[in-house]
Length: 330
Image 1 (cartoon, one colour):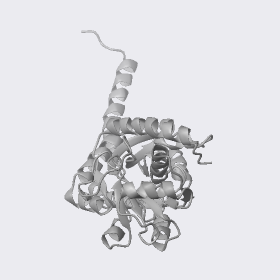
Image 2 (cartoon, helix red, strand yellow):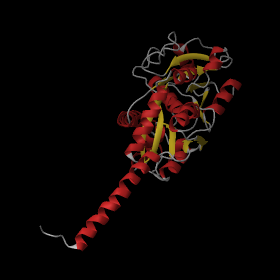
Image 3 (spheres, helix red, strand yellow):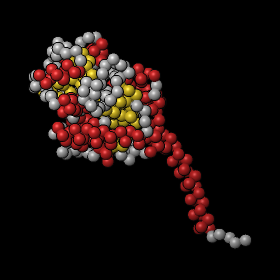
Image 4 (cartoon, helix red, strand yellow):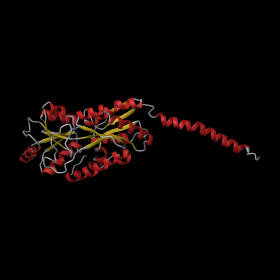
């Protein structure tokens, strides 16, 4: 029998020993995530739709992951501040962005220069909800009964009414610009740093109307605001008696937007898959549905690939509007 030289035997033994040590270590490393708290960076101030959705998911997500999930608000520039921050973090699954689709789909059309590329530097993890916008007026300021009367009132009073929004290029702002373009009416835009302060001024009469991303629905039920129409292609199951903007005469009106989670590009597939699985479980839960009903949102579980496709659709739809209306964020 041929005897193998000792150096070769030694090399093979050493390689086998290394593999025996390394492979279990790699498996343990993959299983270890998350080994510390996960941060969720919300792109808008406390109280808005992004904040409410982020917190509604972060609480049960912490239980599912066995680690704290800490929510931080980094508002400004229609999500660019939060998006830039997350894009520059380590791609290890410990920092996530919760934002409207505007950060990825709208901002590249709004800003001539951005400090990050939302498409290249961020990757979709999981959608959370489709957020509708609700056309609401302060009834003490605007004496109308429905959306058709409102459009007629706008035409009869060009430039006399003002509307609030969470900021330039936000979905409520774009919804109002869509209405102005399709109905050939004019009103003054008052941008705020978030939906909550805009809603406060609508209630206070400083602005006349707003496309609300759902945070004012309790005020509608209390009679402090009047809900005229839904900015979606279909009526909301929460308000089946309220017509859509299309029913008011604006054919093809669709200002819905998608809220969800993004991670730094290059985040391991296994981590993204785990997050997507856990977030989808939460989004499908009755508890989350109930919380979304409170702000007029619709749970939207989907894969990262489906979420990316939605973002591309929104980019085409809103990009054309931004170009037509010459809307700028900077």
